[in-house]
Length: 338
Image (cartoon, rainbow, N blue to C red):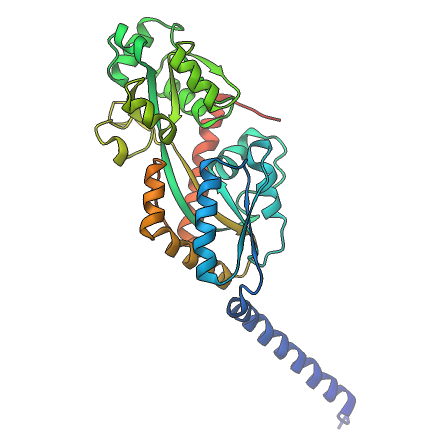
């Protein structure tokens, strides 16, 4: 009989013990990370300049989450490249849940098809936490033009466009903006010919509409609501699948007869891809609890938004669906930014 090697037996025991310890650590590490998390301040990146709706909501939520998690949540504005710069910071951070980003439909669903060399993968490089809110856009028309030509509905607009091909124009905040994509989708779905006028931002586009330089535009509801209320522009329809509580008497575009039209502006919280699931779930609970607070919901309503908290899994599926939808819409529009 071949003698048993004490050395080999000892080595096997040590190796087996090491593997067992490694397995134990791999199982317990995420749980430990969640128990210990957070033990330092969080960084909350807003990929747009200060003062906008995403910045406003990020700061309100940061205060609520600070109270919940017991650590400061420091908001940092890193605008540029349509939101890509700030989103990329979160994509390349340590996957520990200490860097968050207020992503949006642009950063995670539209930009992947507008920019040839996007520095991040909108799905693989992020761990979705929760959607914060969605905001309908609204099709608004120059009031004088609408009155003069007796345009009171989307059907009237389409009828006028078909009778006067190329006569109508619409403004937007620029090529590839939500307003541009909505206009091109309307052209494709309704079979009409209208001209697009890109401006350097939504505010100049709105001024052009008021002055009569453009005939209609797809504007953010929060921005247009005061103008609609004052009778300065004519609201024809909202772009989402359901009506807005702020404009309950204004139909959706689909209700107005244009099938396959469901576009909205949404924004939500993401952290870095690869962050342990228990940490993501802890963040989800903190942000969802904040979104359910009455003052947060009321603030969102004043912005034309509605809080729509989701689980991290639900938000992940939502982002993938939106990305697929906008791939088709960007292709229809022919928009490209390099």
